[in-house]
Image 1 (cartoon, rainbow, N blue to C red):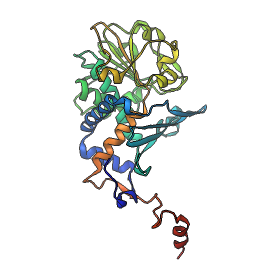
Image 2 (image 1 turned 90 degrees about the horizontal axis):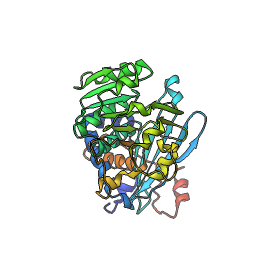
Image 3 (image 1 turned 90 degrees about the vertical axis):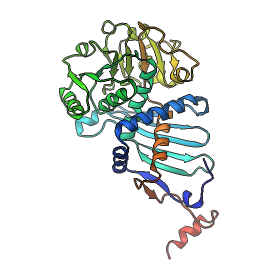
Image 4 (image 1 turned 180 degrees about the vertical axis):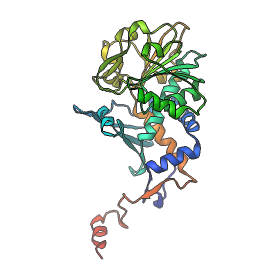
Length: 350
């Protein structure tokens, strides 16, 4: 990053929910998703530069609150995020989030942003980035099992990356499927609500599972999954929560973001610690193979990782210039004499 000017250090740019929505509409949601796919892929290709650690989680009976930090040596970023499946019964979001970027050379924060909407976008962009590398090349049909807040973003991102045009939809709550159909009815997809997961996966080359309940579950059984499909398993994202029968993993090539975190939180919870997986940065950088045959089952055990949030915040930072879609927040003390913080406080009374 270039050397900061004093005026740049006095304030932090803040992107509210309202301004995030305006920014997305200004750019176009499908363009944002395509851009985020590119940003995340760029950062996965420079994986070795990043600090990496499993997210710091505080679990309760109701849900989880997490911090997700990382740095590339020049910029530091973190996301605060919760996951409370019961919230929807109380009219609240299952997931809420905000994130921050700071300069490593000064430690000063430069961006504070809502990340509830941005997390939905980056999660979908990550799924699509992986599918572009692993899914069958002629994949045009996706089964979407779990039609909640993430589902529309997944559909749009998969079209941007892979050309998906047909969606076979299932949710245990038919109102969720109705909502998805309503939201995507004018977006050019063929939408096919289904009565069961078994019906939804018929003819699908990509299967996305994205359910919310915090429990060990079997959304897909082994006999449901045929050869040659790509499974995008993104609902099992915390300890004690899974979606797939373990036998599916046993006959799949499994790909992950950051192995130590996925073994704690992902479908890998069901497998031995030495169960073989491939980290996606290796596929994207050409040091490990992706799909190796038409008959192979590829499985992305996606739990979300801090580098993806860093990429999303980096994208927002880059797109704010020449817009008025942010506020300057005065949250950094800036005394005339940096050694005289008390004097600054004292003068404020006069």
